[in-house]
Length: 195
Image 1 (cartoon, one colour):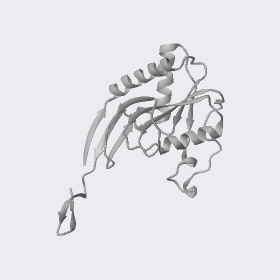
Image 2 (cartoon, one colour):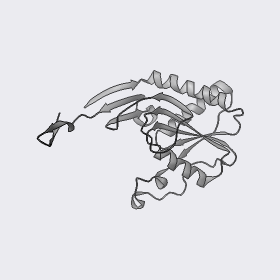
Image 3 (tube, helix red, strand yellow):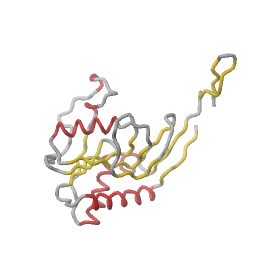
Image 4 (cartoon, helix red, strand yellow):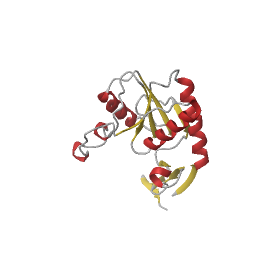
C-alpha cells in the first residue's frame, strides 16, 4: 500500500482563498448567501470559507451543517440514527443562494442526498456546489461550481481529506492498494499479486 500527500496545509489554505474569491465574484449579492456544509468535513470547510468571504467582502454568510444520512442510498433504514433536524441551525433557506460544501466529490450520490435533504428544509433560490477535491467517477449528473483540485484517481485508490478541526492536521492524501490485484492468468486461473 502506498500513500502520497497531494495537498499540504498551505495548499489547502491557498485553495480555499481562491474558492472564496470565486464565490464572491459569482454571487452578485452576498446578503442572501448561505453556506451549508455536509457533515463531517464539509462543515469546517464551509466555516473557513465563510471567514474568508468575510475577510475579503466584509460580510460573513451564515453557515449550517447538513446531515444527509437519512437520504443516502447506501445506508439501510435500521442503520440511520433518528434525527430531530437535518440542518442544524435556524437559518431560513427559502429564496436564498445556497452553496453546498463538501470535502470530496466522487460518485455524486452524497450530493444528490444533500440536495434532497436541503429541499426538504425549504426552497432555495439556487444551489451551488463547492468541493475541495473532485476525483471523478461520477454516477450522477452532478458537477461542482467551485473545485479546489481535480485529482484523477482509480476506484481502488482512496482520497482522504484531513482537517485540523476533525483530524488534528490539514492534508489531502491518496492511498493506493495494490494487494490482491489481478496480474494475469495462467491456464485460465486468475493470478493475484499479494504484498
